[in-house]
Picture 1 (cartoon, helix red, strand yellow):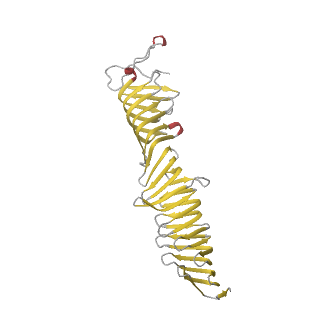
Picture 2 (cartoon, rainbow, N blue to C red; picture 1 turned 30 degrees about the vertical axis):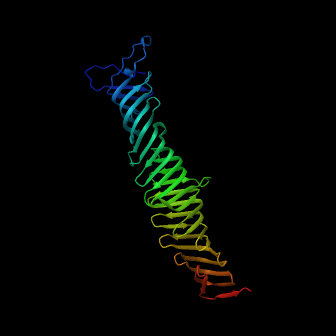
Picture 3 (tube, rainbow, N blue to C red; picture 1 turned 180 degrees about the horizontal axis):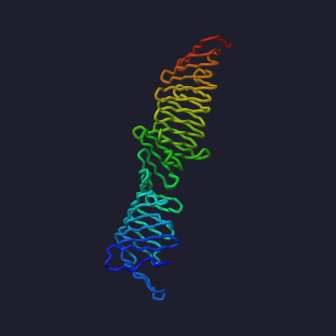
Length: 385
């Protein structure tokens, strides 16, 4: 291997130093290269002054000659075999497949030219040059051969719509994917939504964040915030947050609890359109009005939070604890502010106090008044003594 440093004349103001190893190339500029021994017998350890340079640039290329990094440093000090450089006060760019992917800034670090790796410490900022996402932390490692950027300690991932904190994060430039692990907290700016999980995968191109998994024993926790205070809450095995449009898809043991209206919804699958304020379930669900002590089950349903209206379809069954009533129907529209209901299709109403049963094609009534009017077609009333 050619020696890393080459003797140059004093007339050269900026010195470029290069070397090759297995087709890889690296060089540092604006430094005083140390004198190399002509043979091994005359070799001597280089002094600290000979191994250091100030206000220079470190460059690294892959075997194809494509850049891997370009870093300006206030100071760099090589070890004796010049395989590692300790660097201070650095700024620069990281490249993947010859294209710039991150701009970096850090207090200190180590550069490993032969193993093609950079390790940074201190106050670190890495900005994705393609989408503007900023990563902040106290430890960073760049492994271009593995297409991997690792960030640890007090890390934050900052996006115009979302801010994420976690114990560690991994970024892949080729797949445009970020993965955060350990006490992950993601906060959506508008509407204000906070998500807690142990693992989060952010697919940047699709603008999609996936938290947890369907088989995850530790549920994902979600809170909607109003003036920094949690109002609506949700738990699920898996949560997928779409940024455009803003939709939250929940799966596996889903529970949603709303403050206004005072409802709780449970299902294996719920889709919450945050922009429209609509919650939809294509599967069996359970809805409870905690204030009125009314519970409803159905094969599918939708809650309009703005209109405060619930629409349910398929084997709908409502139960009222106050008068031990039961209403069965094919379709039900429930207007929560007035507690009025409209049932259509195969309506059956049963009440225990007093005991009677009504059957007909449609029904209207109010939960709070414990009154139901069945009309249309043949209406059958059965009084049970």
